Length: 113
Length: 178
Length: 148
Image (cartoon, rainbow over all chains, first blue to last red):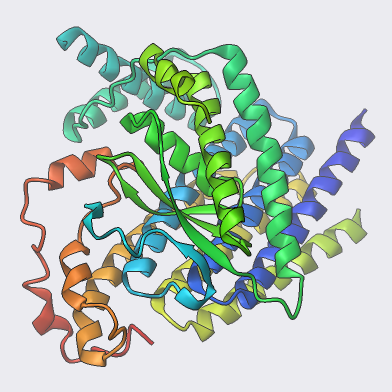
């Protein structure tokens, strides 16, 4: 039983590490800020969750698992808010490269406020 | 009216207390009472406008939403990973306006939060009054794909409303076909 | 087990280095915030992985603090940056296709419904351009540094 939990934890940790590396690659390769932010929200958050799960599987203590649960909830609740703040700032500063956009519904929406 | 307000505050205080107890990691009378005192102090010192929640939590809908959310998150993550490792390919994207059908504050917030984590999307701007979300989608190559994405967003909203929505919101969702 | 530790450490280090490169290269301050966010998440992952390998929970409270801190940092820098950019852009000539006043007026409000209804409602009665009228003298002597 313990061995199974350990192996599952290792798998979670390795996949989490892979996702973290991919987030780094995406951060380097994507052409504009809005695309790069996808790297910060999706692979990064999933990788973080996997590493936390792996950690919980190794520690197996109720006190530690509640802390890890809090960390997971915090990061899942806050990552979209931070991304929204930055995305909004980026679009208004004209950093969305319009040559990369297939559709831009926001461009015509001057009366959006 | 005032009764509902006190109920909202009670829920907020209870939520903060739960976080406090989780931080301590053990449920004892001391952590519970301490958390409650701190929650009340926090709510008095930093007063919030009440987030009115008129819905009910539907267990089955919540379960369905949570399961689909985890699945979407894994799929979306690996889509971004695949794009990241497709060397020599510059991913194109789109900003799509999606008008939600049940634009309560809480529903809008939850949909926006969920959207930023799942299917390849990111909130750029929000029109709170009209209930419009401006969503940045990665990896869109044609306007047709952008239109298809709108359907996905509305489907996500439908799942959220079915999980947490009020009766009025549920009616609004069911009336308009997706 | 040692092999797994080495592999995970290498992967996390690779991600952290790439994030660092993005922080250095920029080009705008917002790119750097995003990269800093990723770097911080990588650090949280590294601490959690270390706790998993050594089975030692001492560092876990640090994780809770870090996960909140990253968010606070990103949001405050984003708000700071958007205000400075709206002041600095006309001077540096970026973005000539957009009238700068358009987002200057918009620049200080919070996201309308994401997570922060309290701050939103308490700020609503204030004039929207508070602060901007004060900041131009403060930043006028270094208008280009933060944008590029």
